[in-house]
Image (cartoon, rainbow, N blue to C red):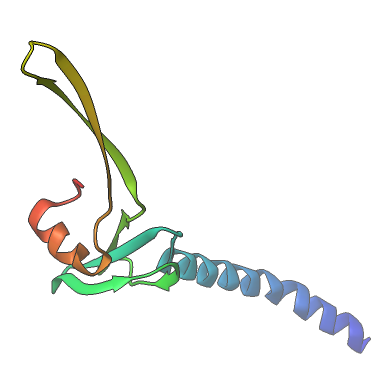
Length: 119
């Protein structure tokens, strides 16, 4: 008889327990975000503006209504710049310069404040 009462109690209260666990899990899920490999993160705070800390790869915690993560790709990217040049005897030469560039991670807050998201 004791086990019957215990299972009844468990069945009634388990729905409350599972609902509470689901709500807490949803709130925690909204407060976590990932920064992938080759990316860095700058935090925009509603009260302080852009923070000067650069956050590296991994899973991080934020307050969703206060912070907004801005994720930058800092991997090396190529850019080709074509140029047409004439030499003395009226011949033209096509030259293409390939430039590899990437933003410096420690300067990302300043870059975001000056240029925004365009890199």
